[in-house]
Length: 170
Length: 93
Image 1 (cartoon, each protein chain N blue to C red):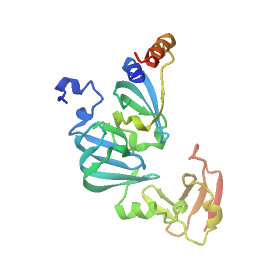
Image 2 (image 1 turned 30 degrees about the vertical axis):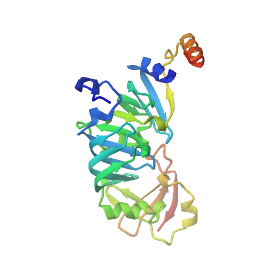
Image 3 (image 1 turned 90 degrees about the vertical axis):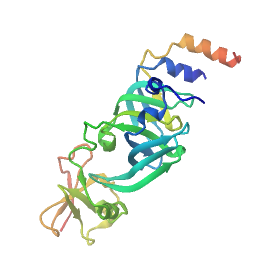
Image 4 (image 1 turned 135 degrees about the vertical axis):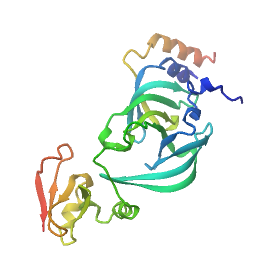
């Protein structure tokens, strides 16, 4: 095997042109890893330095540091080069601490939790959980006054701005 | 090697690659290799709202094993040529 000359790298399908760049690696289980590509081979086995996992739940996200990662190629779906001039995520997304995202991710009343303008809105457990849990997570939005009083709306995914149904009210 | 050769002819054309995880990415075919790994340029995800993490990805490498479909430009297939090549390949030539 011979090493490709520098100009060939940019014409081939090899990952060589992505070396030492900040990348997004999408894995088969849906995980999203960010990091700098330091090495790879023909199976798309890859070494990521300074890797972190980006966990996204609804409109909140968190980057969890992982360190140096070797990814087995069969788990790779896509390796994307990040455009440094473009924001990585839409502006309405809020960064939260790891503990917070884990709580939401682990299904801490998932259908009743939602971030709205940076605050976590959580329903109290005395709501009718049976009827609420039958709805898909993205359909539920909750917001309102202080921590205890708020309303839940059922909003169709296509038109988030209009509230079609009030499901529960404290 | 037929499809490898076929995809090589499509380099520079606009294609949509649909993956087994339902993610569909449109972009200019930059290159393809023997495993049918694909590199796309100027990519955009078909359903951007659903995949916010793909927003700033402009160029990407897609592992051939995760591809479900490649949607081609309407004039991307020369049927006659493909027929001939298929017969040649089947004869082992």
